[in-house]
Length: 148
Image (tube, rainbow, N blue to C red):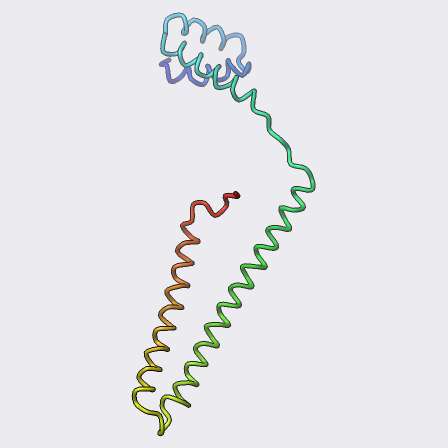
């Protein structure tokens, strides 16, 4: 066996999971291998550090609040989606009505028609840019789940 084969035995030894034959084989290898002795010490230090870590089990109130928080976020996000879609529909429809009734009316001056078209195009471009940026930021935000 090579040293990499003994790594499993080292972790099993530290955890107390080896039988007598495996323990004996590991001990005879450790007498001759300084690398595996260092690995054994490293694993013992890690196990000691992990044994000192206390894992808390969340209370029932936490889980009740957790699921309520998920529902609230889902509802809020769905509300934002409908609000944005509604705003897009209203802006688009309002722009078409504005174009048809004001800008393309026979008595509208040319400068009002051109200015109105540019304003509508600008608003649409800003809205699309804002939505695209928010989607990109939310997709790549590394700290969105971090609480302050």
